[in-house]
Length: 180
Figure 1 (cartoon, one colour):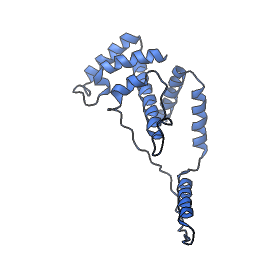
Figure 2 (cartoon, helix red, strand yellow; figure 1 turned 90 degrees about the horizontal axis):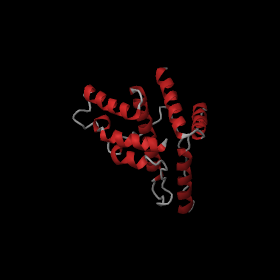
Figure 3 (cartoon, one colour; figure 1 turned 30 degrees about the vertical axis):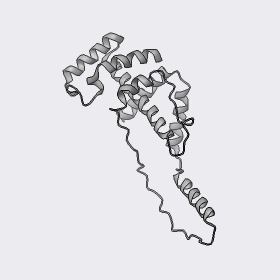
Figure 4 (cartoon, one colour; figure 1 turned 180 degrees about the horizontal axis):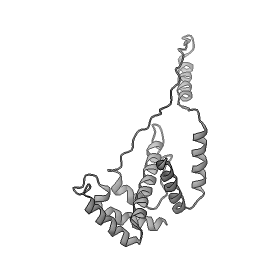
């Protein structure tokens, strides 16, 4: 399936008006439909299947890109930076990196208001520094709820499936969520 995704991405890259929002015909429905028809003919798929494949590949690409960016935190050696193992990732990265915008997420949960803590100034500075770092780490750990556990369970099950099946299942899950 990975080699088929690679072929798909190579043809998708040629249809620039489908992925480059700066293309002059990006918003022209007729041109976009013609480009989708060319992909349909090449892969013998319906237009809905083509759109779902594009959505799934872009979603997977975005997730992999986020993993790479997340692993490049300050102080991380180049050996510890996440490296994507999907054979089609470099092909997608070649043309999608500039058009896919990763958004910073924020929580909509009510944050706990921290009580003011008295700091003791009589401790040596290295102990104070260590305490400050530990407090920052503690603040960064979020409480998990049943939705986090459910998502982790689904992720674990998707990882055990072949990639093509997991992409289809992921798409079906997203379709169910958007219908509700």
